[in-house]
Length: 421
Image (cartoon, rainbow, N blue to C red; front, side, top):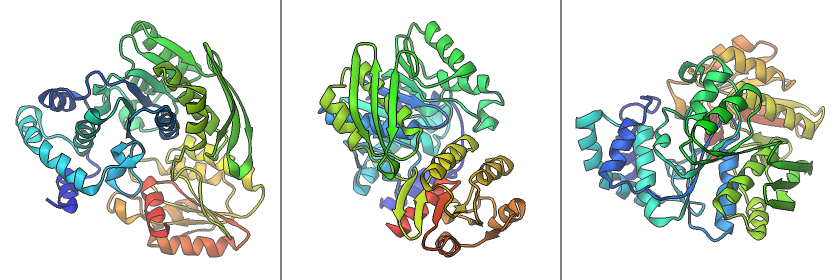
């Protein structure tokens, strides 16, 4: 089996197919002898900020001398990014070997409880590969929480970053419903870390109480002070029950990132791995591509994978604070599973000088057409394909002193990053 064969195998049911529930994942792990059993770490859910929080935590744990498995999602360029050991994605050869060893189990499970989805296979592969090699695991939840394949895990720490509207088709139409889905990752006796507010926080608190879990809340048990350093990121201080970390440096851009970092520090404290040196070095060395990532100048080209209205609005506001009234031209694409009205409204809050719409080839058949997006947007929107041509057009519209923001879809961000790296 080649790497291309392996990708074809796991994608054969459709890259965008979905069967929610943990039954098949649990069955696979049982047949494998439950390699995840006894692993400590953090399961991280939330509408936005999951990846940044996870990246910060994984970096802190590595700096503490731990062998760290990291399961981020989705990937930007290669599937191997989803299975990392100490910050290094598994090789294509390891990806193939891990899948080949798993296929007999997958076949047996398919006969008993149905064919595993792509996401379930990737989850099982990740655990089969990293579990014997690590003593800490950081796992980002895919969709929601309650019915996500990763909810088969109990790592001791459950993080719910925040709750906003996203994936309503699967998670519900109210903040309370969505929060219930995400807070369902909390297991009995867990240590819960959250940045939720309002009714979402009430839901998380209720789940924690019923599970007999300790809860630390940002703005209550967890204190945060931060100062923006422009394109250099942030300086911050994080405090909590029995801990205090000052003079921290965070290179991630966006004024929402210090909150994510604070949740990561608290999670490291809950795991007993937050030495002063580990926290300082870990945050300072955190890398999280595709999130307000500056990749070029004259004009600046910034990548941001926020793909729901709340994320786009936050990222856009943070970017505007950095660039002031400078000219901004977005390159935008989105998948058909999302509401174009809401996302185009969020795009309009960026106050763009113009907008270029495109379609990532990696999401062929599942992206809303560029022509449709441009027609719906109006106001100087134009459709240009493929993405590299769209980027070239946006750079021309922005001019050397302007800014281009590639946004709306992680598939688009990953495609541009791969082509311009």
